[in-house]
Amino acid sequence: MPDLVMQPMPGMRPTPGTRRAGRREWAGLAVLALPCLLLSIDVTVLYFALPFITARLAPSGAQLLWIVDIYSFVLAGLLITMGTVGDRIGRRRLLLYGAAVFGTASVLAAYATGPVMLILARAAMGAAGATLMPSTLGLIRVLFVDPDQRRVAVAIWTASFSGGVALGPLLGGFLLEHFWWGAVFLINVPVMLLLLVLGLAFLPEFRDPRPGRFDLTSAGLSLAAVLSAVYGMKRIAEHGWTAVPMTAFVVGVILGGLLVVRQRRVDQPLIDPRLFASRAVRTALAVNALALFALVGFSFFATQYLQLVAGLTPLVAGLWTMLPATAMIISVLAAPRLLRLLRLGGALGAGLVVTALGFGIASRLGVSGGLPVLLGAYAVLISGVGVVLTICTDVVLGNAPPERAGSASALSESAIEFGGALGVAVLGSIATAVYRNEVPTRAPSGLPTIAVDAARETLGGAVEVAHRLPGGLHPGGLGDMLLRVAQECYVDAMSVTALIAMTVMAVTAIAVVVVLRRDAAPSMPESSTVGSSTAGDAVAGRAESVGTEGSDRTVADSAAPGA
Image (cartoon, rainbow, N blue to C red; front, side):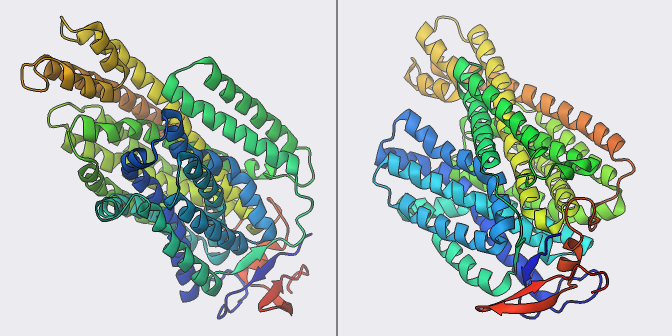
């Protein structure tokens, strides 16, 4: 049985039984929230900076897509591998290494002299991001042994992402108004420096000193499978179900199947298959993916609605999104209380029903006066998603033994990434098909075919061609009439995706309540479930000092009962 090495924070006093977190642990949680807050801000501000990047670096259309997509491709591809690496070399160490790389890559991105340099810097940021997310969740598993406290900690961790979504538009708008585009990347540097300093002071180290041989073949399969599948899904959303993206997706699925088969055969798997023995874990991973399938698939079009239908500037549109983000923060923090009031299936089902209700409201969207409807619907549905993500993350984390918490966290995050990409591909394709079918049949008569074709491609194309038509956007002009039709078709397409998302969430809610009707929220997993018999005791504080190495004390649990 492997001993688990945990280097404690100063002031941590081990006590028999379940240890409740004190002030230092909560301070450690605040440190862990920093990278989560920053990652969500970073994604938000990039979209504000794209017009400035385009003007300065003059990327081609393909290069611009890679500037946006390379980060998520690399992050998704490396999540599972990095989660396992953190379990082996130490989660704090991996977190701090990732922070250093992320900060350095951010400087390179800020001062990029061309598109290729920016793409490479963004790829490095994605690799670093893959170290940050599983490390933070894995350390939460170590810091908070008490199940109730762990749920609150996971809720705060989830809320930090929502906080970044709320702050991103404000921060991005301010920086781009007063500085050059590279400033949106430089904001990462002081935060990562702060993480490096505070991480050493407040975060414990945790690793398995005898993890066995690292399975490079599984790591390669994981990277290739996720990259192929995510690339295929993203390109399907952009170009439709053509040969290249479909082939990439199928290859990813096949490689993923080979990865699963290999995990059942090797002695030291990258993903411990025994984790899937828990019905609650299997359900939580599926629900995570389905919730993001619905949310991201719909959000892909909702953000364009704010600018191209409601007529808001990017900054004003971003400010309006603060309202739903605030609603999500509130719901996320309320999730632990909901879990105490209801059993696991009931709490998850309630979150899914609220999400379905939000999509139902969104399906009533119109062109005129649609902004309050969209914002209200989004506040409702994202509140439900917040509850779902918090509970599902806690289920996966709570059922994993401490020495596997990093890889389990990465698995949860991978389900989220996969669900979001699939939502954009499937719901995006459906909405695009609805829009493209309706525009030619409803366009005003007498329009040049080339104008109708341009409007049929995208709503942005309709806006551009409408300005050039006789009468422009003046009331009664051909341009105004075409744009009005395009906006109505776009709203119809959004309504279809909202109805599909509502149906998926409603069916999922029923299935979850039935499948998990007897399951309780996870507490400490039994040692025989997935891992060693020493895991629970090591984290609970049943430890003794066995020596020193440098400035870090090494604490290992004794395998003897009652030690």
